[in-house]
Amino acid sequence: MVIGEGTSAWFVGSVKGIPFDKSKIAAAYSLAAQFLGMRFVYLEAGSGASSSVRPEMVKAVRKVFKGFLIVGGGIRVPKTAKDIVKAGADALVIGTLLEKKGSLKKLTEIAKAIRTIKK
Image 1: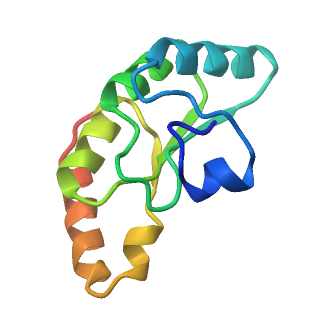
Image 2: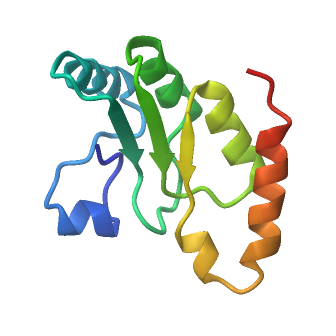
C-alpha cells in the first residue's frame, strides 16, 4: 500500500496514499489483507520519498498483521532503518539510495545497524 503522496509509486499507480499520520488506516488495510489470505504487506512511501514510513505506523500494522511485513521508501540513514525494523518490519526496500555515489558505504552502515537489533 502506498503511504503519503507525490512519489513515483503514487503517480504511476494513480492511488490515494494513506497519510503518514494515519496508522490505524494502514493497520485496517493490513488486517483486511490478512483476512483475504495475503501473506505479505508492503508499506511503500515511494521511490525517493522525502520521508519514510513512520515507525508508529509499522508498529500498528505489525500489531494486527501476522504475515511478512515489507517497508520501503525514504530510508537513507541507519537510524531510520533500525527504528523501522525495531517497530516490526521483516524486510526493508532501499532503492534510490543505491543509485547514488558512495551508496555501498551507506548501505553497509544500514546493514550493520540492523544486525545489532535483538528480536
